[in-house]
Image (cartoon, rainbow, N blue to C red):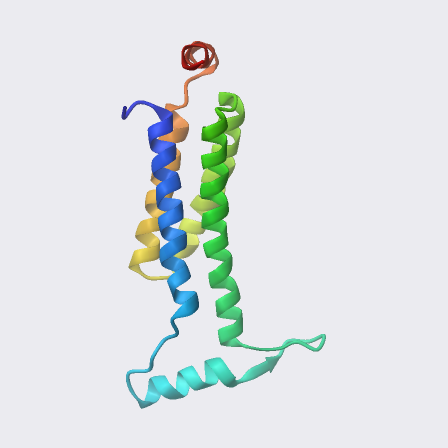
Length: 153
């Protein structure tokens, strides 16, 4: 089971979905200041609207929420994409190409997380990258792929 690429890719799908769900909680629950300094900072972040040009006046909180929701949607898109390909049992060369793209995107995302965020998103994104990498390396080569697909049908 551990040598099968589907196990690792389904594990990546689970962690992509889990990461998306956990990260979406922050979209509905706002931060609460613990002291007067934090209250002032949160007030500025949420209420001070900068002129961003072209008639856009957004607060830092608006920008933070937009970026945060994009990460949530990226995780859901990645998970749904891989789940669909696994369910449809697409050709292994197509699956390998899509997993490579996902691995590239989430590896870059992991580096950004390591630099700019805190432990939970770093760990979850790191596990996603790990499972995608193991899944990619366990996808059989062309000769073995043809035999595997004939056995699964």
